Length: 487
Image 1 (cartoon, rainbow, N blue to C red):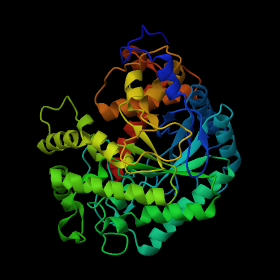
Image 2 (cartoon, one colour; image 1 turned 90 degrees about the vertical axis):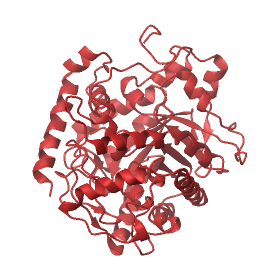
Image 3 (cartoon, helix red, strand yellow; image 1 turned 30 degrees about the vertical axis):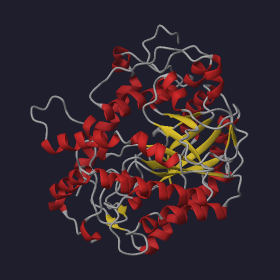
C-alpha cells in the first residue's frame, strides 16, 4: 500500500486538506452525523441467495465486505441494490427485503458497520424494465417502452405499463422495505432514482409517456418518487434518514411526440434503438430544459425532507460504448452514434451537479463518479462547515465524495488518503471495456474480500483469480439464460 504502487494523482494531501475530508457532516433533517466526507457508493455485491434471502453463509460474506469498508474509513456506506420485490430484481443474487424474514441478519449487517462509527444506508430499488430476461418474463414500467437490447450481455423482455393500483402497490413495497430496515437498525435508505431503474423511468419523459397523473409534466413524473418519500416519512421516525440518488442522464431526453402512448412488440426493436439515438442528440435548449427539470425535482426532494441527494451518471444504455466487442470486424453504426452522443452528454455532468447544488439550501449533495486522485477529491469538496445549517444560496457545494469501484480494489482508501499515504486510487488494467471492467474486476474483488482474500490489481493476478473466473462463469450463464428466455 505504498506510494510506489501505480496510482492516480501526483500529490498526497496536506494536513489541512486531509482534515477537510475528515470533517463530520450533520444531515439536516434526521440530525444524523456522518463521521467524515467519504461515501461508499452503492455497488451490486451479488452476495445473496438466488431467491434474494441472506442465510448465515451469505451473511458472513456480506459482513466481511462491509466490515472492510467500515474499517477502511468510509463514513457513509450505501449498500448495493436492495430489491423491494423479489420477483423483480436487477440481478439474480441481489438482497431482497419484502418482510421481516431476515430481520435478525439485517440487524447484524447494520451493527457491523456502526461498530466502526460508520452509517449504513440501504439503497432500495425496483428495476422496472431493466431486469434481465432470465429473471423476469414480463417486466413492468411506467409505459410499455422497451429497453433496447444493445448487447448480448443485456437481454431484456418487453415491459408492460403499470396500472394505477399497481403503482400504489409498488409505492407500498418501498415503504414496507424501509420499515423493516428501520427495525433492523439501518441509519436510513437511499431511494434509487438513477441509472434507468423504475423510479428513474418515471422521471424520464421518454420512458414515461403516461397521460394520467403519473405522466406528462415534471410534477406528475416526479409524483411516484414523491409519494414513496412521503410514505416512508409517515411510516418511520424522523431520525430515520432518507436520501435519493439522481441521474445526470435521464433528465436529458426528449419526450415522445405529443406524449402519446406507443404500442411495442418484437418488431419495434430497431425503432426503439433509433428513438434512443434521437434522444441523445438533444440540443442545448433541450439540455437546459432538462437541467431545469432536475433542479425542480431536487427542490421537491428538499421540501420533503430528503437529507442528501447523490448525483451520479449513466444507465445501462449509456454504458454501451464500453460494451463493444473489440474482436468484431464491424461495429454497429448505431452503437457508434450512441457512444459519441453519450460522451457529449456526460460532459454536462459537472454542470448538472453545480446547477442542483447551488439551488439547495439545506439538503446535502454527494457527487459520485470518476474520483481517482486525492487532489481531485479535495478540489471537488466545497462545503460549508458543520456548524452552518444552511448553504449559501447561489454557491455550488459538494458535501461528500462518493467512491464506487475504487472501494472494491482498496477498501481502506479513505484512511490511506486522510493519512497522506497515497496520491489516489490504484490503477486497474483495462480489460474489454468500461462495463466489463466493472462487472469483472470490481465484482471479482468484492467477492475476494467476501471470502477473506486481498483484492488483486495486476492483470495476471486478476486472470488467475478464482473469484474473477467465477464471475465470468456467472455472467456467461446470465447471457445464455437471457437469450433462451427473451421473448
